[in-house]
Length: 117
Length: 114
Image (cartoon, rainbow over all chains, first blue to last red; front, side):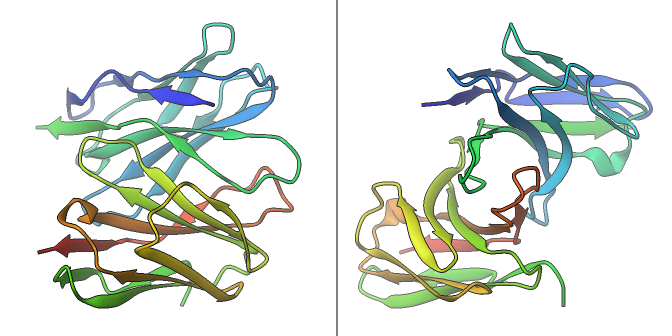
C-alpha cells in the first residue's frame, strides 16, 4: 500500500516571500501521479499542481512549482511571491497510474500555511 | 451549475437518527467517491463508484450506506452513528477513462453526531 507523509503540520511565510512544503511518499509502483491540493476555509479541495512520475521535468503553475525527486520519493511544493490568499491547508496526494483504476487518492495529513503581512 | 455540489453543508444528528448526505456532479464524470476527513488524520477513502457500480469499500462500517442511482448523483445514508463519526465528508468525481484527469471535490458536509 502507498503512504504519503507530510512532516510539517504548520508553516508560516511573509507576504511576497517564498515557502517550501515537504512531502515524501512510499510506493512500489513505477508509474503514478502526485498532486498538491489546497483546502481553504471554504473546505473545497482545489488542485494546485500535478506531476506525472514518468516526467523528469518538474511541474510549474504560475507561482507554484514542485521539486520531484523520484529516487528519493520526495515531492515538495514551492510557493513564490506568497499572497494572503495562499493561506490554507495543503495536502500532498498520490494516485496509481495503473490502467482501469479510478482516481483513488492517498493523502498526507496536510500542512497548514499561514501568510503574514 | 458546475462542479461538485454537496448538501447539506452542516448536519447535526443524534445517534439514533437517520439522515442522508447528497452529492451531485455536473462535470459529466463517470466515477464518484466519498472521503472522510477527520482532524489531524489523512483523508480516508470510503467508497468508490465507477459507472454506478461500487468498486471499492474500504472496510467502512455498515452504519454508512452509499447509493449511486446514476453517474451524476451519490448519496451517503447514515444511521445509528457514533460520536467518533463526526467529521467532514467530502464527495469527489473524476473521469476514469482518462488517467491524467484530476478528481474534483465538493465543499463537504460537516457532520456532528451528538
